[in-house]
Length: 327
Ligand code: ATP
Ligand code: MG
Image 1 (cartoon, rainbow, N blue to C red):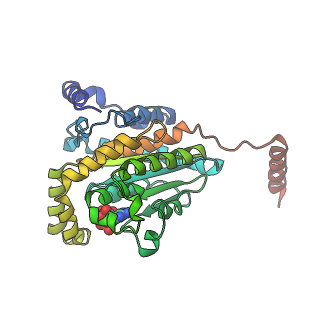
Image 2: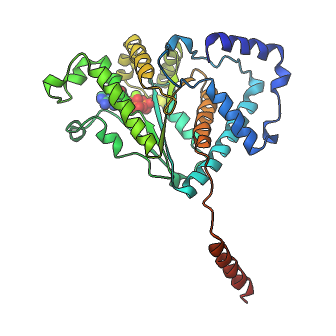
Image 3: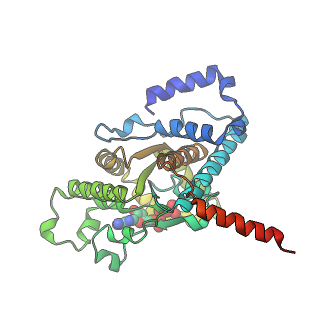
């Protein structure tokens, strides 16, 4: 959602708070899915040609008070439940698959979002893969190779915690990483980023044509909020393990990263494989947006439980009758 629209909504919210205090739990599954679709659309880029990062806020646009906390919690719980119900059909139908890619600056909340949003999903139908600095074996292959090995099977949801998008992010920000990639010198030209965007677009188009829908989530956190979370990671002994000097160093390249994000979103967001720009300064709100985006993507698949043939149904009833007749 653009900042203007967001500010308008925020003032509507303040003037007419009562209208938003509806009973979410009273909604039918279809209504929940419809609301999730509409809600997620505000953050969906679609065709990225005109994308500008500055049009998107890192804040939710709505101030949540302590009083709102239970409502926000309930909204996420209901979203997670709807997502789990759709995933059950995805698994049973065994035709489509969904790949959800998470990209963000450090401490933007990727791990927590994945944990909470996928909390209701049957673990059999979901797989999370994390991509860190590539190994020597991985560097001996093309850049998509290591990710291809982790693509979701039909009927499954695959989550990528970082992905091949690092190839146009950290690798673009640090020239030394590109130089260490063992590419033939002749192939490393000024066009390399455009070429990688094109390869990524083609790859995602290929996946879509084969039944794997790809959606991409950018957790848009502000530099100020990152600072706050980094300090918390130092102050809270249980969070010390999450923090390193390397994270603080990367923060120094904030502008370069934002430029790289803007470029990649502009070049790789499409109607069929969109980027979602999720305001991430408020973790609970971000999780609701993410759950909604996933619900939206699953709903687009028009999933249905497999239909059983008449003969098969008759057979099932026969079995039931003999089970009931057992002593
Ligand atoms: P956390 O939130 O726990 O910090 P993380 O995803 O940041 O999770 P880390 O182990 O801290 O995990 O960092 C992984 C690092 O690997 C990131 O800095 C990322 O930029 C880097 N990385 C990922 N892919 C590549 C790549 N293809 N080339 C170089 N570096 C990469
Ligand atoms: Mg990190």
